[in-house]
Amino acid sequence: DSSTDSKTNAKKAYAIAGHASLPIPPPKKSKREEVIAVAVISSQPSSGKEERCWLMVKRPPKGLLAGQWEFPSVCVWNSAKDDDNGGPKKKKKKGEKSPKKSAVVEVPLVDPVVRSNALDSFLSD
Image: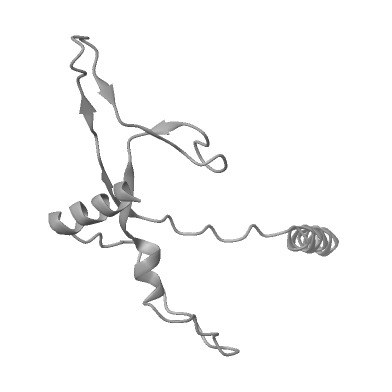
């Protein structure tokens, strides 16, 4: 029985060594939360047409949903700005643990005047 135990232990050792050589996937980045002000603007031509016209803008040619049309919008807050705290990132020292980030992101309430000013600024550019 001791020979079967040693064979079993050897198989376990090979299995562990095999798994240790496989690459480990990198940790996923946390999702970015955003507060966006969107302007949905329509007009009805005075020519008597029954069809409404909508103001739309074309998305950039690269990236997610590239080249598609959307209502004009502007980001008034995102979680990446909150994470930065306005300062440069500090390098952690060897052996120093990084603080754990909470899974909950607090999305602030944005004052309607701030939203309106951000959208006005975006539309006037």
